[in-house]
Length: 195
Image 1 (cartoon, rainbow, N blue to C red):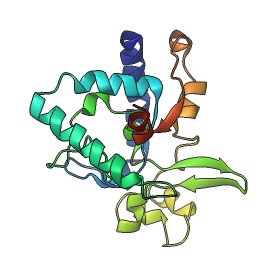
Image 2 (spheres, helix red, strand yellow; image 1 turned 135 degrees about the horizontal axis):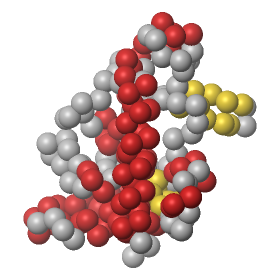
Image 3 (tube, rainbow, N blue to C red; image 1 turned 90 degrees about the horizontal axis):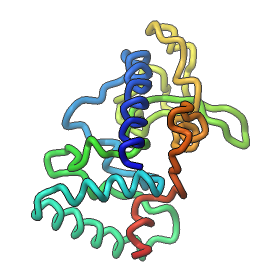
């Protein structure tokens, strides 16, 4: 199953390269920027989580210990929260890189892009959280809302015209990947708390 999933990720990365390129005037992501990895709940499917954990076993013992200790600490901290628990990713290194970058989930691969999302109130533009820090898409955000006309001022037609979540990518799999079963989607820590 991992071989097919790796091929799927290669295909998805090609699609995402084009989407990042189309949004290039607004993307300020660069190596060492870890804003998206500092606060989130990181929804992962069962397949993504199994792939990530298989990668954990390839790391040196010290890295594994560090990650496991951070997961344990976060699980303990999470017990005191009644609402959505937002946290730093336990796979983020002290150098602001990912221990398992090549095995990161789809939510991680799409960090930094703006997209259209559906809600009960209609369609809205979803921006990365770093917009509030004057980073990605700050040119189209006036502090309260997205000014869609500003996209055109930078030669960009609009945000990505679909959702960037795993459900979208799972529903729209190319035929060659229809046998992939992603399984249930949960916040990352929920996968660890069931053990």
